[in-house]
View 1 (tube, rainbow, N blue to C red):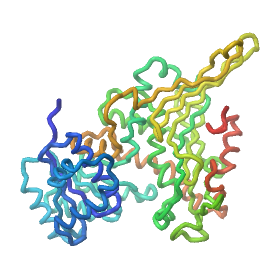
View 2 (view 1 turned 180 degrees about the horizontal axis):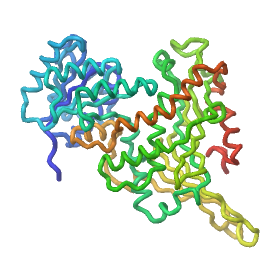
View 3 (view 1 turned 135 degrees about the vertical axis):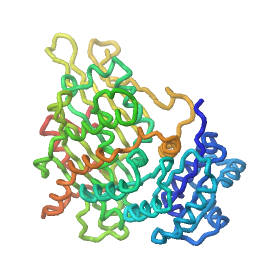
View 4 (view 1 turned 30 degrees about the vertical axis):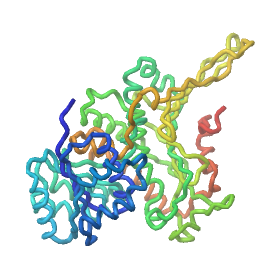
Length: 477
């Protein structure tokens, strides 16, 4: 077994929502499972003038409620790892105090600095970290999304951080890359001769990638209204799902070999030249007692922000030429799911043998992690064929404890593995592809399509598929 990494994890924004809901619970789970070095330390940092005891009290109130199966003894030990420092990003002296605290433990293998802050603080924080000597090779900087709002702003953030940290020190986090179901795509494809020979334009008619949420924007209206579904979900999570689905076999599982192949997919995406037809945007409207988006907290009544996006994409390479990739995401939809659907071309049906049953593979990341293969089987007592599904439950197939995404990603950063993090050129290529859509929508007088809250989304997105003879999964038989 590989020795555990002795670490200091410096958590900026430690009193914020993400730290309390996700990061500290994830670190507790890793601790309780015995997966953290016994001397590893967590140093919470924020502007709040807390003592260590006051910070621990807040963690107990606001973080423990997000942890399942908590054990008092394990929690007490976990608290021993935690320290706190009040720090103002604008004060160089505060960073000197931080450096002094970190340097009290010179034998650490890694210093992880997690910037769970607004992106506007990334540059000043990195500048002052470097000035305080906290950019040595063993320091790793974690950048929480969103990394920009378009190509120009993404490039600016990357340039600012790169002035003080090398690329191999920068961990751009996308929690979807921590999902076991998504990581399973590579062994599913490249470890099984059953799938890889068919994973191409000769056999696949279309691909669908969906992230659907039943919730609306809740109390996040102010943030969401300047973000929208394309920035919030498509540019990061859905593009990563697309890359894992479409990439070529990497030379190895080394971080850059995998990321090189993902980059090639993004660079092969055809420009969206007819945006009104290829990129459908929608906004949920009141229905069945549910608010519409414009009635949500701190959302302007005349907002044109999209809560739903459906895109028809094409990859211009030999494996996928001519295969449509339908990408969609939305809030206040009929079900919660994250899935990848490969629809296979139908077998020739000459009427002499069996009626064709369209084959498909459905890879679900949530709410369950499953792979469902749709096949034709004989109907009982008849020569007819009927569809049936073969289901692989990934949770049962790989017995043992399954870490939540943030826990896995935090452990990867601590151990210095970059495989599950975005490289700069990946993110900028994704923004280069999608920024024209944002610019078109900003200039267009046409508002988003309205769709009833609790429905499957925009009718125009159904029509986009119908032009190619395709149907969304929920409409298929």
